[in-house]
Length: 338
Image 1 (cartoon, rainbow, N blue to C red):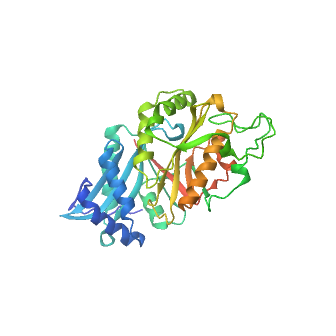
Image 2: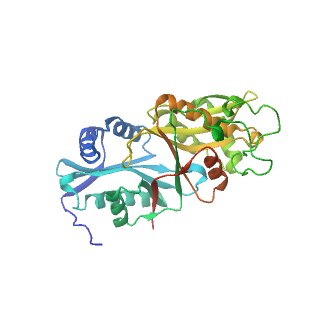
Image 3: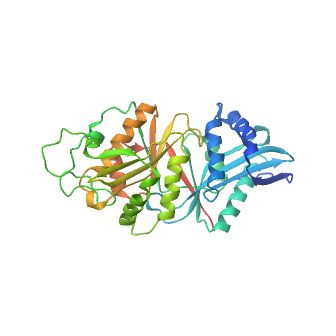
């Protein structure tokens, strides 16, 4: 593939609050619709949590002609490597094919190397040919991770997700959640009726950290605090949940709503992490959290739920498929940083 023609006049600097209008204008010209609220949230998040976000602007003289927005990945679903996820990249139409995107990515790579980041990650729809060509030119590869999603519909009842009936004893996966149910004659109950479910608050952080430590064997208090902050402050709608049994938090689901990166045309909820106290692994707490999430999203008219899974995590993948998830039309990409 031919190398892009790089304009020597292009300079790169961090995005600033005053860049909002220019970014919104370029994005609208590319996507065909305004996404001011989404972009403003991304810029605000970078100001609020600068250690978690990296955002660059490309300028030709004083004019902003391109941008790249990324956020740090520290441990979603047990991943040990640090990473940067590209959420949004755009170049003004009359400046495309002049190497602007290349310069923005170089700035991100330089930042990543300074911070000891191991990889860049991103995603796009399989038929977004413009982005796929750019990923190819920028040396991204198809990731082994898989994106799975599920339509919310109106959050209506689905037996595989909402019933409290379990798998035969011993047949459920055994990592974060055990999906079997104890014997009994209470199968008429919905999964979400089996725990006290409520919206997550910052006061739940100690319990969440405790459960995460039991599941991962690692102390990730700082990471879980950042995840909780993002779930509460960096989402259009608060949808993260905790489950209580015996007057204690025994499970959690962190998720956020989005309408943004790379061609999304519908409101989407993204699940970042889910966990259940191993002492309560036979109580269908995971299904209860997922069932309640879908009810809440249906009322909010969010149309789809998405998450990304490592192929080795068969327990979590089985749980999600059991809840109605299926392979997405979006693909995950990665670029290793040498």
